[in-house]
Image 1: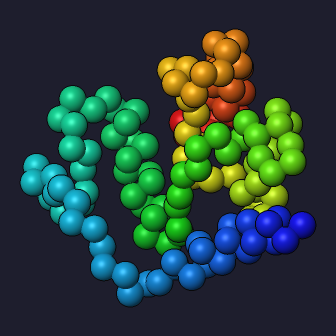
Image 2: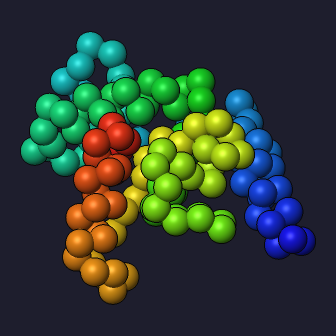
Image 3: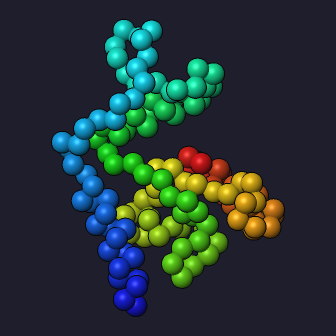
Amino acid sequence: MNSLKIFLYSLVCVPAFSCNRKVMKANLPVDTNSDSKHAAPIDALATKETKALYKNLLQLSSNHTLFGHQHATEYGHGWSGDVDRSDVKSVTGSHPAVIGIDVSGFTGRPAIEVEKAYRITHNSHHII
């Protein structure tokens, strides 16, 4: 039970204490072809969808703290495979901004589980 308290405390407190408006902005690449200076993807061949995602995440980050979490919706503390669930959502009320999943089978999980995790996450309109 003590480890659960520590885990939940860290999920809530670490993001809360890391939210500081006076934090210096990252030195991101600047799109010099634009009338206004703004960060741009490094990949010159990025698709229009990737550029739109990058722009939206950048705009959101000016007023919100965004973070990613590996396997957030696949399993958590005391559960596995539940629909629309994550430990992050249990504590904060919403899923992480970006959810990482293993699509290469690197973790040794069966291919059918990897495909299922991808399908569920993708169909839920999460950023993978």
